[in-house]
Amino acid sequence: MRNCLIASCLLVIMLMLDSCRTPHDITYFQDATAGTVVDPSYPLEIRVKPDDKLAILVTTQDEQITSLFNLTKSTNQTSTNSWGYTVDNQGNINFPVLGELHVAGLTRTEVSDYICKRLEESDLVKDPIVTVEYANSGISIIGEVKSPGNYEFNKDRLNIIDAIAMAGDLTLNGQRENITVIRRIEGGRQEVYRINLLDLRSAVASPVYYLQQNDIVYVEPDDKKKRESTVVGNTMYTPSFWLSIASFGMTVVTFVLALTR
Image (tube, rainbow, N blue to C red; front, side):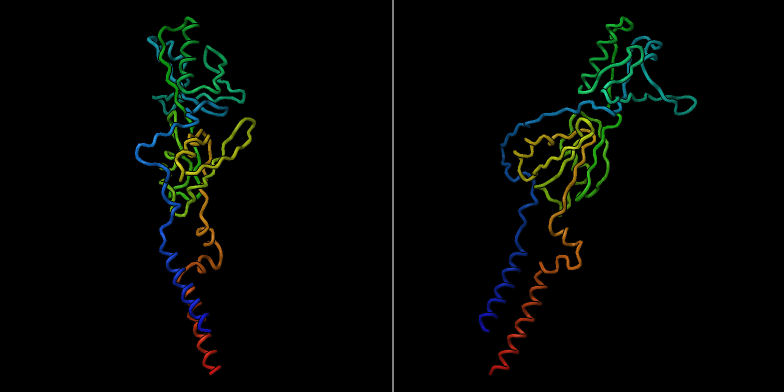
């Protein structure tokens, strides 16, 4: 009986010490040291895909000619705004005067250069300036982040750290080593990737380190957060629970010892 009592006390002490242990799965990029240089395996600029909407503005020295190429939408009786071109399922846009242009797979800069070249080849304009912006580049960030939601961005590159920062960073209950990224590929299919933010080298080498439009980033909760959804929850993992068990056990042992004297 005395051995059982000693074992119970040791178990409680071990559990209390374990509860004071510093977690090792919170700090990002644990393999990074001063002077570390890592090249991304997939340097990526956002490229045009079907269903994207592009805001394209053509500027020339002739205002009348300029107006031929710029779609506008009336916002009131006195002003207009540049409007967007939607990329169809074949990756094309229907551009004024020039007709159908295939832009899927091009970067924003490449679309601009392509339209400039076609305009100059048409002999309609000289030295045109073409500005191209993404009108609907967005990603979804859900799960264990401080501000989940849909986030629009208008830049040529967006890595997953930038995206997580937009959502206010992960909560303490988010699994940093097992983040899911769901990406739409050809034919409307979805491809699933996993990325580990505890390891700098593997994260930067991932195909989803740089995100694309319409990516879904899901941060899975850790086991502690999952247990909170049950009735018992994390009760069994707290020192107070095991102190109560040990106290009850010692009471039983004391009672049995008293009966056997």
